Image 1: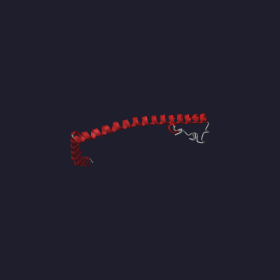
Image 2 (image 1 turned 90 degrees about the vertical axis):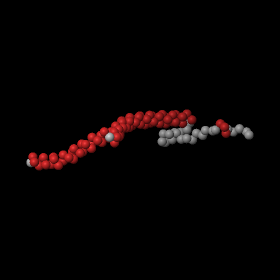
Image 3 (image 1 turned 180 degrees about the horizontal axis):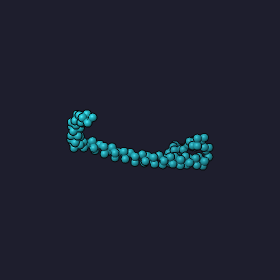
Image 4 (image 1 turned 180 degrees about the vertical axis):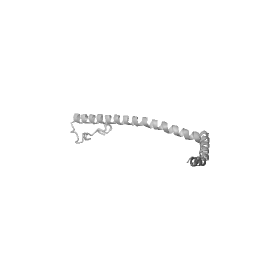
Length: 107
């Protein structure tokens, strides 16, 4: 039993040693430095994306509030102009605005 363990350990030992040496060489090489820099930037980018998601949620909430205010303003304006509100809650856009530059003036 012990002899089988030692035999397997001795056959694996060169692989472990060479793997450790390769790992040490790569760790201090430019390739290792680039890999480490990439991992650090990816972690930082994940933090930034979480911050951006929070800002996006806040912007969506603000846009929703502004949309509600706009709808209320449109309804109030429609009531003031005497136009009946549309069934969807939005006033119909039947109010025609005239261009002051093209007013009816004799030529």
